[in-house]
Image (tube, rainbow, N blue to C red; front, side, top):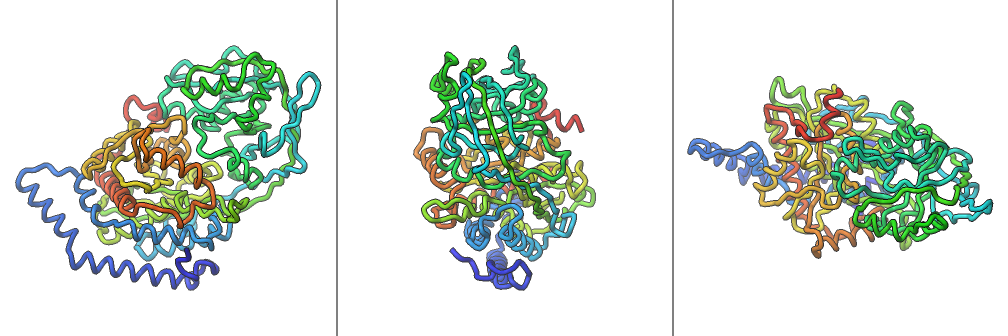
Length: 577
């Protein structure tokens, strides 16, 4: 659906004036509506009455009450319609479409009184190396008893160009189970194996005894490679766990030749020395295990329930030939701030983050080649804009400053947030927390909130108070196999010692709602059908926004900075600083 024709034109202020006029009329109307009803005044007067009567009204509960009537989901959806319009061309990092989307965001921030906080106005330029596999000049084969068994690119396997692939590599294969080394639990899948000069085969997931956040951390590409490189490994083959695949193989491999990216800043390259990275179709995985005394069916059955996996040499080697074309591109993060009201605390920041990029233009599905990314993550970027609009009406409501950070490159491996966290445009130690929103999926009424990082810092305690005051239950990650804790931008902040969390609309495991979400992932996640022609629950979106706003205000107004829990693994990052 087109929001306005101006979006398709170059991202100058004049080109966006039609959209801005519509947006300002909306804000004027909403402001007038608030003035007539006096809702904020009523809430404040009631709070004062309660206090004089001796009742305890917590800061978090007050914040969520102040936000409760401020969101109806409709203004949020209007922002999504712009960001996910076909004229944005899927918002690929570095593309003209993303630049148009970011220009729209900047104009909205300006209109809502959000000040520039990038290194170049509202922008923080980020340089990338772009890598694209040339499949016609690339190949994969298994070498067994001196004979070559080709693997079909796309059908059997594909290359991961997020690492700097060697032009040619041939090496023996070793299956290393989950491929994890977790010192805190004295767990090491690599122990006792000869891995020097070998390519390891890894089954996706982690053993059940590992806490979800800890397991997710050590499954990140950078952390995993530290241990593998130390053991002498030269490459990695990943076997997706069929029990936790978000999307079917046919769609996983569809855009395998789409360009990937790495930060041009070599100091942030965490996979230096990895010569081969590829993913093998679970339906073809038995080819790797033939002659080993084990089967992939055996491994998948154990892995489904996160049981311990055997580790053993395979009876084949891998031979890979790659041709990768490399170019450079510059994109940007967009950053704005609302200054706090307290003379001292305004020099500290609560970050609201969301990634604004998506997949761009790719292989067509049902004739549609624009991957609009309405929920992933037009939804999160729109939420930030809607919160900024809401806070404009009450500029003195937060003592600390609020930093709105729209990052690029998330779909390329959290690269925009990784760059910002390493080169923040405000003093690094002034950031007290990150509240990240990514694909929160308001498909059902908001009765349950899933919080990633719930038990790691006292941010979890605050969000529980805010949500439960609104009648919403809170749960930790119910599906640790999906590794959600490390799959979005909060993880970049966490690794720099900043307490952070992310939230989504939750549901009970095994319920009809759970099936609804699974179907959404299968049919729409990373597909062109994630557009604005899909059903959403606007009331649920508004309730979710109110919780985010309430949490933000509560954190901004607390005397103490958020702290890691004493038993949290991630506490070490802040201590290291």
